[in-house]
Amino acid sequence: MQAASLGIPFQPVRGLFGTDVAADGGFATVRDPYSGELVYVVPRIRPEWAVLHVHEADEQGNARLYGSPGYDLVMAEAAAHVILTTERLVSSEEFRAHPEQTKIPGIFVSAVAVVAGGASPCGCMPDYDVDPDGINAYLQAAGSEAALAAYLDRVTP
Image (cartoon, rainbow, N blue to C red; front, side, top):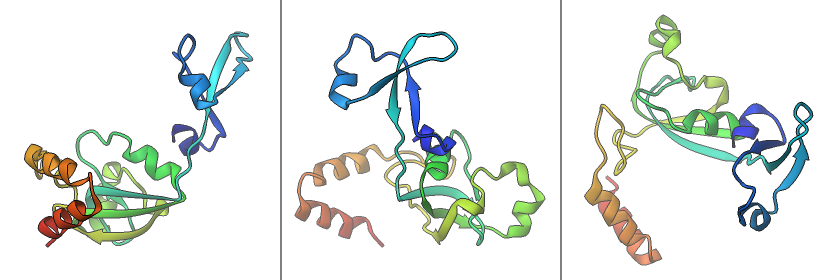
């Protein structure tokens, strides 16, 4: 996804020589034009949709993430379309007053939905922490379609 977020067709990677990962993945090699070294490259992954949960968003899709965003920013840039769920909808004026806090610009976003608690059972710090029991319940339910449906019925308001 890093390659897709940068708009390039592939990404060079280190650490694959001497492993079966490159052969099993069908990865190609290219010669580094600067050092002459042979490097593996992996093709970009460009998802059609990314659904991301954020702390705050405005109606135009500008979003704020507090703490470490992980791969959320890369996914937002790599995907063809982005849907945001957010803890809180705030005014566009608030975003304009503090533009440095905008992590995902609205130009990448197709839709915004207010879903307080939407990251649960994972965390959305500082609003709420990870729920280990909730994650365990999800993992147990994920083994069958009926169990997953029952789990979703229990946790969906």
